[in-house]
Length: 216
Ligand code: SAH
Image (cartoon, rainbow, N blue to C red; front, top):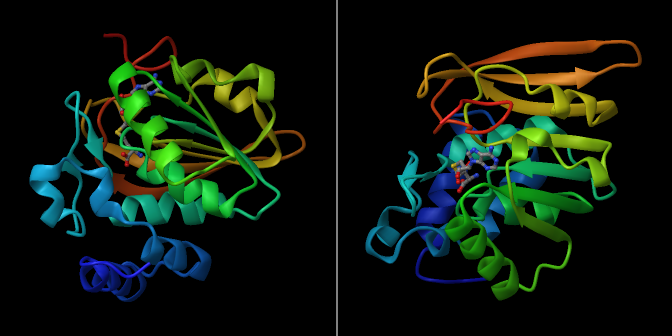
Protein backbone atom coordinates (compact mmCIF):
# COMPACT_ATOMS: atom_id res chain seq x y z
CA UNK A 1 0.00 0.00 0.00
CA UNK A 2 2.25 2.82 -1.28
CA UNK A 3 1.05 6.34 -0.51
CA UNK A 4 2.39 9.83 0.20
CA UNK A 5 3.04 8.85 3.85
CA UNK A 6 5.12 5.77 3.10
CA UNK A 7 8.41 7.39 4.19
CA UNK A 8 7.13 8.90 7.49
CA UNK A 9 5.56 5.52 8.23
CA UNK A 10 8.86 3.73 7.59
CA UNK A 11 10.61 6.19 9.91
CA UNK A 12 8.00 5.61 12.61
CA UNK A 13 8.55 1.85 12.42
CA UNK A 14 12.35 2.25 12.43
CA UNK A 15 12.00 4.32 15.64
CA UNK A 16 9.77 1.67 17.20
CA UNK A 17 12.35 -1.00 16.42
CA UNK A 18 15.61 0.87 17.13
CA UNK A 19 14.72 3.35 19.87
CA UNK A 20 11.76 1.75 21.62
CA UNK A 21 13.00 -1.83 21.16
CA UNK A 22 9.73 -3.27 19.92
CA UNK A 23 10.70 -6.78 18.86
CA UNK A 24 7.55 -8.44 17.57
CA UNK A 25 8.04 -8.30 13.81
CA UNK A 26 4.36 -8.96 13.19
CA UNK A 27 3.47 -5.81 15.12
CA UNK A 28 6.09 -3.75 13.28
CA UNK A 29 4.99 -5.12 9.94
CA UNK A 30 1.34 -4.28 10.45
CA UNK A 31 2.19 -0.77 11.67
CA UNK A 32 4.11 -0.31 8.44
CA UNK A 33 0.95 -1.13 6.52
CA UNK A 34 -1.89 0.63 8.37
CA UNK A 35 -2.31 4.24 7.17
CA UNK A 36 -2.30 6.04 10.54
CA UNK A 37 -2.92 9.41 8.82
CA UNK A 38 -6.46 8.28 7.99
CA UNK A 39 -7.25 7.95 11.72
CA UNK A 40 -6.51 11.55 12.76
CA UNK A 41 -8.48 14.73 11.98
CA UNK A 42 -7.80 16.02 8.45
CA UNK A 43 -6.20 19.25 9.75
CA UNK A 44 -3.40 17.39 11.56
CA UNK A 45 -2.93 14.56 9.08
CA UNK A 46 0.67 15.60 8.43
CA UNK A 47 1.50 14.98 12.12
CA UNK A 48 0.12 11.45 12.16
CA UNK A 49 3.50 9.66 12.23
CA UNK A 50 5.06 11.82 14.95
CA UNK A 51 6.25 10.30 18.20
CA UNK A 52 3.29 11.42 20.30
CA UNK A 53 -0.43 11.09 20.96
CA UNK A 54 -2.72 13.41 18.98
CA UNK A 55 -6.16 14.87 19.61
CA UNK A 56 -9.15 13.21 17.94
CA UNK A 57 -12.87 14.05 18.34
CA UNK A 58 -14.71 14.38 21.69
CA UNK A 59 -11.59 15.52 23.63
CA UNK A 60 -9.98 12.09 23.30
CA UNK A 61 -6.60 11.08 21.83
CA UNK A 62 -5.12 8.59 19.39
CA UNK A 63 -2.36 6.89 21.39
CA UNK A 64 1.34 7.47 20.66
CA UNK A 65 2.62 4.87 18.13
CA UNK A 66 5.01 3.42 20.74
CA UNK A 67 2.14 2.80 23.18
CA UNK A 68 0.04 1.11 20.48
CA UNK A 69 3.01 -1.10 19.56
CA UNK A 70 3.95 -1.89 23.17
CA UNK A 71 0.42 -2.78 24.29
CA UNK A 72 -0.09 -4.93 21.21
CA UNK A 73 3.24 -6.70 21.69
CA UNK A 74 2.44 -7.41 25.36
CA UNK A 75 -0.76 -9.24 24.34
CA UNK A 76 1.35 -11.84 22.43
CA UNK A 77 -1.30 -12.25 19.75
CA UNK A 78 -1.65 -15.13 17.30
CA UNK A 79 -4.36 -15.63 14.65
CA UNK A 80 -6.47 -17.87 16.91
CA UNK A 81 -6.79 -15.37 19.80
CA UNK A 82 -9.97 -13.62 20.90
CA UNK A 83 -9.42 -10.08 22.14
CA UNK A 84 -11.51 -7.48 23.98
CA UNK A 85 -10.55 -3.85 23.38
CA UNK A 86 -11.82 -1.07 25.64
CA UNK A 87 -11.64 2.44 24.18
CA UNK A 88 -11.63 2.17 20.39
CA UNK A 89 -11.20 5.95 19.99
CA UNK A 90 -10.00 6.59 16.44
CA UNK A 91 -10.13 2.90 15.53
CA UNK A 92 -6.38 2.74 14.79
CA UNK A 93 -5.56 0.24 17.53
CA UNK A 94 -8.69 -1.74 16.63
CA UNK A 95 -7.51 -2.18 13.04
CA UNK A 96 -4.01 -3.22 14.18
CA UNK A 97 -5.49 -5.82 16.55
CA UNK A 98 -7.82 -7.14 13.85
CA UNK A 99 -4.83 -8.03 11.65
CA UNK A 100 -2.98 -9.94 14.38
CA UNK A 101 -5.70 -11.80 16.29
CA UNK A 102 -8.62 -13.99 15.26
CA UNK A 103 -11.52 -11.91 16.50
CA UNK A 104 -11.87 -8.55 18.25
CA UNK A 105 -14.70 -7.33 20.44
CA UNK A 106 -14.37 -3.61 20.96
CA UNK A 107 -16.21 -1.20 23.24
CA UNK A 108 -16.20 2.59 22.98
CA UNK A 109 -18.06 4.79 25.45
CA UNK A 110 -18.48 7.86 23.22
CA UNK A 111 -21.05 7.33 20.49
CA UNK A 112 -19.43 9.73 18.03
CA UNK A 113 -16.13 7.81 18.28
CA UNK A 114 -17.82 4.42 18.01
CA UNK A 115 -19.34 5.65 14.74
CA UNK A 116 -15.96 6.88 13.49
CA UNK A 117 -14.37 3.51 14.27
CA UNK A 118 -17.22 1.60 12.61
CA UNK A 119 -16.74 3.71 9.46
CA UNK A 120 -13.05 2.81 9.38
CA UNK A 121 -13.85 -0.89 9.79
CA UNK A 122 -16.26 -0.63 6.88
CA UNK A 123 -13.78 1.34 4.76
CA UNK A 124 -11.07 -1.29 5.21
CA UNK A 125 -13.62 -4.13 4.88
CA UNK A 126 -12.62 -5.60 8.21
CA UNK A 127 -14.91 -8.47 9.12
CA UNK A 128 -13.43 -9.84 12.36
CA UNK A 129 -14.46 -6.98 14.68
CA UNK A 130 -17.70 -6.48 16.58
CA UNK A 131 -18.01 -3.00 18.10
CA UNK A 132 -20.51 -1.58 20.56
CA UNK A 133 -21.02 1.75 22.28
CA UNK A 134 -21.09 1.07 26.03
CA UNK A 135 -19.17 1.22 29.30
CA UNK A 136 -16.29 -1.18 28.75
CA UNK A 137 -15.35 -1.42 32.44
CA UNK A 138 -18.00 -4.14 32.70
CA UNK A 139 -16.29 -6.12 29.96
CA UNK A 140 -18.41 -8.13 27.51
CA UNK A 141 -19.68 -11.15 29.42
CA UNK A 142 -21.46 -12.75 26.46
CA UNK A 143 -18.17 -13.37 24.61
CA UNK A 144 -15.89 -14.09 27.59
CA UNK A 145 -13.37 -15.51 28.30
CA UNK A 146 -10.82 -13.48 26.33
CA UNK A 147 -7.22 -14.39 25.51
CA UNK A 148 -6.32 -10.73 25.60
CA UNK A 149 -7.91 -7.55 26.97
CA UNK A 150 -6.48 -4.17 26.01
CA UNK A 151 -7.65 -1.08 27.89
CA UNK A 152 -6.69 2.13 26.08
CA UNK A 153 -7.67 4.55 28.89
CA UNK A 154 -6.23 5.10 32.38
CA UNK A 155 -8.02 3.28 35.21
CA UNK A 156 -7.81 3.92 38.99
CA UNK A 157 -7.56 0.16 39.59
CA UNK A 158 -7.91 -3.22 37.83
CA UNK A 159 -11.62 -3.49 36.93
CA UNK A 160 -12.90 -6.70 38.54
CA UNK A 161 -15.12 -7.77 35.59
CA UNK A 162 -12.11 -7.63 33.26
CA UNK A 163 -10.05 -9.90 35.54
CA UNK A 164 -12.98 -12.31 35.70
CA UNK A 165 -13.39 -12.35 31.90
CA UNK A 166 -9.76 -13.27 31.27
CA UNK A 167 -9.06 -16.85 30.11
CA UNK A 168 -6.42 -18.88 31.97
CA UNK A 169 -3.18 -17.84 30.26
CA UNK A 170 -4.90 -14.67 29.02
CA UNK A 171 -3.36 -11.21 29.34
CA UNK A 172 -4.85 -7.89 30.43
CA UNK A 173 -2.85 -4.82 29.38
CA UNK A 174 -3.99 -1.69 31.19
CA UNK A 175 -2.70 1.70 32.41
CA UNK A 176 -3.35 2.17 36.15
CA UNK A 177 -3.04 5.36 38.21
CA UNK A 178 -4.88 7.53 40.72
CA UNK A 179 -4.35 10.67 38.74
CA UNK A 180 -6.43 11.24 35.64
CA UNK A 181 -3.41 11.76 33.33
CA UNK A 182 -0.50 9.78 34.71
CA UNK A 183 -0.39 6.00 34.96
CA UNK A 184 1.80 2.92 34.90
CA UNK A 185 1.33 0.31 32.24
CA UNK A 186 0.58 -3.14 33.64
CA UNK A 187 0.27 -6.58 32.16
CA UNK A 188 -1.75 -9.07 34.19
CA UNK A 189 -1.53 -12.74 33.22
CA UNK A 190 -4.17 -15.09 34.57
CA UNK A 191 -2.71 -18.35 35.83
CA UNK A 192 -4.70 -21.38 36.98
CA UNK A 193 -5.07 -20.13 40.53
CA UNK A 194 -4.06 -16.46 40.56
CA UNK A 195 -2.97 -13.38 38.62
CA UNK A 196 0.62 -12.42 37.85
CA UNK A 197 1.29 -8.68 37.47
CA UNK A 198 4.18 -6.97 35.64
CA UNK A 199 4.91 -3.22 35.55
CA UNK A 200 6.04 -1.65 32.24
CA UNK A 201 6.63 1.91 33.42
CA UNK A 202 5.04 5.34 33.12
CA UNK A 203 2.50 6.36 30.53
CA UNK A 204 -0.22 8.95 30.03
CA UNK A 205 -3.77 8.18 28.94
CA UNK A 206 -7.14 9.90 29.00
CA UNK A 207 -9.29 8.58 31.90
CA UNK A 208 -11.31 5.38 31.79
CA UNK A 209 -14.76 6.56 32.80
CA UNK A 210 -17.32 4.06 34.00
CA UNK A 211 -18.75 1.87 36.73
CA UNK A 212 -15.36 0.22 37.47
CA UNK A 213 -13.24 3.20 36.38
CA UNK A 214 -13.32 6.90 37.24
CA UNK A 215 -16.75 8.27 38.04
CA UNK A 216 -17.60 11.28 35.94
N1 SAH B 1 -6.66 3.24 21.06
C1 SAH B 1 -7.35 4.48 20.86
C2 SAH B 1 -7.27 5.30 22.13
C3 SAH B 1 -8.39 6.23 22.29
S1 SAH B 1 -8.33 7.19 23.76
C4 SAH B 1 -6.68 5.21 19.71
O1 SAH B 1 -5.48 5.06 19.57
O2 SAH B 1 -7.36 5.94 19.00
C5 SAH B 1 -9.25 6.21 24.88
C6 SAH B 1 -10.68 5.97 24.52
O3 SAH B 1 -11.29 5.30 25.62
C7 SAH B 1 -11.51 7.21 24.28
O4 SAH B 1 -12.06 7.13 22.99
C8 SAH B 1 -12.60 7.16 25.36
O5 SAH B 1 -13.85 7.63 24.91
C9 SAH B 1 -12.65 5.67 25.66
N2 SAH B 1 -13.21 5.30 26.96
C10 SAH B 1 -13.05 5.91 28.17
N3 SAH B 1 -13.73 5.24 29.11
C11 SAH B 1 -14.32 4.17 28.51
C12 SAH B 1 -15.16 3.10 28.96
N4 SAH B 1 -15.53 2.97 30.21
N5 SAH B 1 -15.57 2.19 28.05
C13 SAH B 1 -15.22 2.29 26.73
N6 SAH B 1 -14.44 3.29 26.25
C14 SAH B 1 -13.99 4.21 27.13
